[in-house]
Length: 103
Image 1 (cartoon, helix red, strand yellow):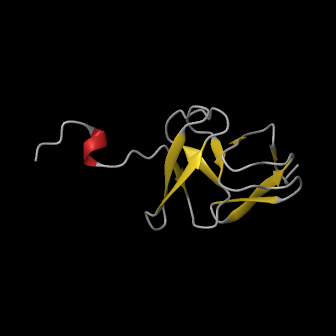
Image 2 (image 1 turned 180 degrees about the vertical axis):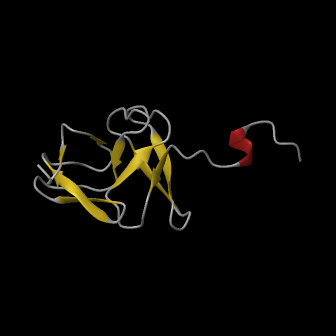
Image 3 (image 1 turned 30 degrees about the vertical axis):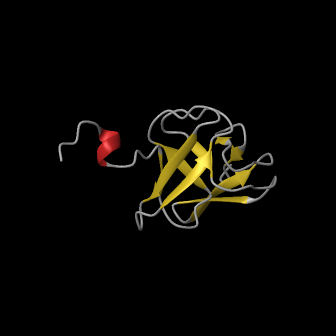
């Protein structure tokens, strides 16, 4: 069989998740609001689908689960900060709703 496009040969991942248990994924392409996107876990190649609630630019984060204000945010299997607002699965995560605990 001749593969004529990337979509025929593999499923297109739009974000990656560093480790199982992380609360956010990182966009590997721009994600549009209301788009259903597939992410891949780097530690075991499993996948997850999320509906983006807002647009997420390349390199920025998308929420994988609901979080309440003040909850720890886990990425790379470590706490990287806290939610500075309530989040819903699929939300765009950046400095407007994620704060570092370092300062």
